[in-house]
Image 1 (cartoon, helix red, strand yellow):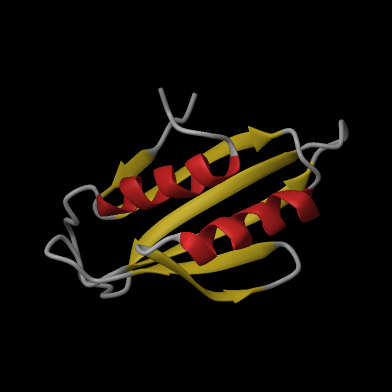
Image 2 (cartoon, rainbow, N blue to C red; image 1 turned 90 degrees about the vertical axis):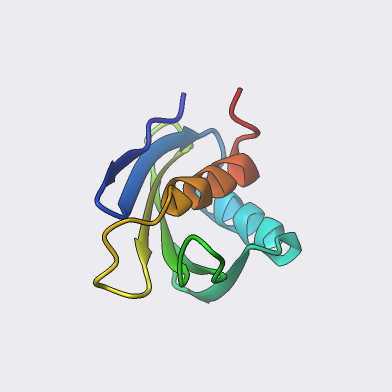
Length: 111
């Protein structure tokens, strides 16, 4: 189950993927290349920063996905979404939508 917490226009969530961190990161990179609404801004060894495009809800969000290895070989993924314009107080749920896109790319659609 995906539990997204939102305060003002900042959203965050954590979930588990049964892939090693490198494979989970590669899956997200591959999925992001096919997405119209999210594009990769940059990536590091343990994280990927994506940018959502501007629309009527928001000027865009920065979505950060961090990959933490677990003892069983899986990965804990932490995802944060924050608006590009720092004084944004309400984004019509765009951050939560962006987090769901990352989740769907790694785990599958939320039922």
